[in-house]
Amino acid sequence: MGSMGFKVLVFGLFLVNVAVLCNGGSTSTFVRSVEKAVDMPLDSDVFAVPSGYNAPQQVHITQGDLEGKAVIVSWVTEDEPGSSKVRYWSENSKQKKIAKGIFVTYRYFNYSSGYIHHCTIKNLEHNTKYYYEVGITHTTRQFWFVTPPQVGPDVPYTFGLIGDLGQSFDSNKTLTHYEKNPTKGQTVLFVGDLSYADNYPNHDNVRWDTWARFVERSVAYQPWIWVAGNHEIDFAPEIGETVPFKPYSHRYHVPYKASNSTQPFWYSIKRASAHIIVLASYSAYGKYTPQYKWLEQELPKVNRTETPWLIVLMHSPWYNSYNYHYMEGESMRVMYEPWFVQYKVDVVFAGHVHAYERSERVSNVAYNIVNGICTPVKDQSAPVYITIGDGGNLEGLATNMTEPQPAYSAYREASFGHAIFDIKNRTHAYYAWHRNQDGYAVEADKMWFFNRFWHPIDDSTTHSSH
Image (cartoon, rainbow, N blue to C red; front, side):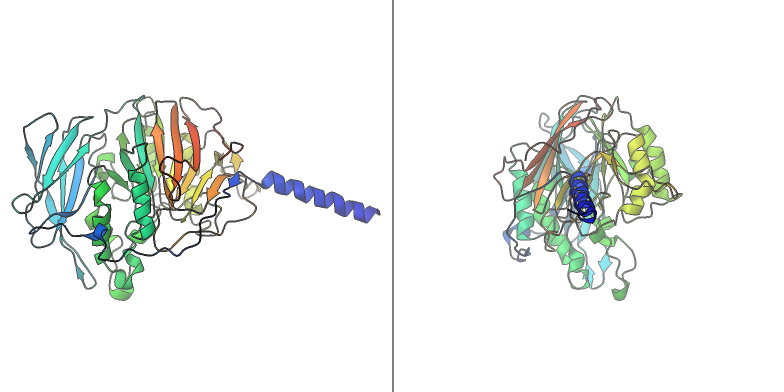
């Protein structure tokens, strides 16, 4: 072989080695049959309007304060305002109390909303089952919820993860799969994109109503913690709608003032042993903006001896190896990633990309404009980034991945599903992702999380089998 041939061979071997080194974790071998996601017809039973005059519908709850002793109850009445009061009592008490709420309405293009009620029940006991009734004076409907344990470092708690849900047949499978998971989620962390009403002509707001009736079977009984996604923006100047987030902000109230936020799109709560920070991918986040200043003040407040688990929710992912929405989260990552490393965030959950992906613990904060260091590196102070925008909406799956799989990507798969984040104590949490195609107990991807503050050892899973 001549010297030129030898050089070509060496260079070829070098390229092969580079490819091997660059290749990250595993891309799932499971191939879901490619079927178009189809919306459930409007006469489906999941959209049924409850019977009775002025019956409350679209009942949903979320946390109503900073530490889990309050609940915001929301519902809609169609015929007339009716009562905005909630009657509630604990499982072990016959004494029934009344909380007073408010109602709001809005117009969007040619749509007029029903009467949207919001009522905050305060001063609840921790770790207690409560029954509550809405629709007092007309058609009364009864539901229940369980308050979380008192905030503390070794309090076990189980969160469900759902994102980008929509109202297709696949959406229904995802919600059913979550409900039937043997590991029972106690609260859903919902990472944005609810109804997809903006995918219909003139942002058909009837689809906000149908979606809320569809998810009532879960969210009337356990809190869903809301994140605003791009499908909640509803900014449509072509039809005269110039107020962003109008339907979402009228329908979904959150306890943002309790964490000193100035807007409902970014806020924080404590629940059991977790401090959860919600960020807004579609609100201003640059330096000196209200969101920036709030997060700058919020992160130092996190007390890891009280809430060891630091979880961040957002809609647009920072680390994403699909060819959909690629790099959309990049400018926000540049702004906030150094803080996430400094404060040792355990995990970041995002949606937006309609597929599943879990990263290694990586950071990309060394770059400056002259040093050329711009590749993510393993960093045990960094969070794991999980994209779980795979709820099942009618836009379908993101199946086109970047190749080769980058080193920061531990596992990826284009399937619909949900996940469970099961906190055991201050040092360990068990995480599992479940694809809709499997039996309820099957874990398609899983890992043990070791807490970054109390047990910061390497929890990489690149070489584990799936």
